[in-house]
Length: 42
Picture 1 (cartoon, helix red, strand yellow):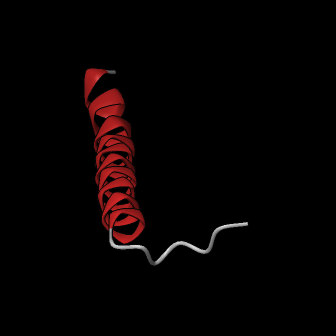
Picture 2: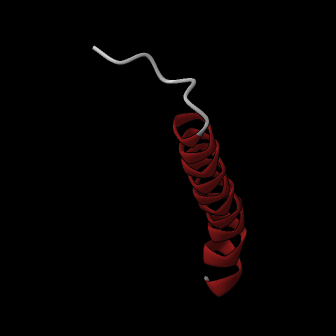
């Protein structure tokens, strides 16, 4: 039973970690672009 749970949780955990990494990288990139004036106002 525990082996089945362990097999299912690893891909989900990796996907969650990848999404968190993508989220933070996107936030950092957005902050850099806004601070350099690449954002369009209005």
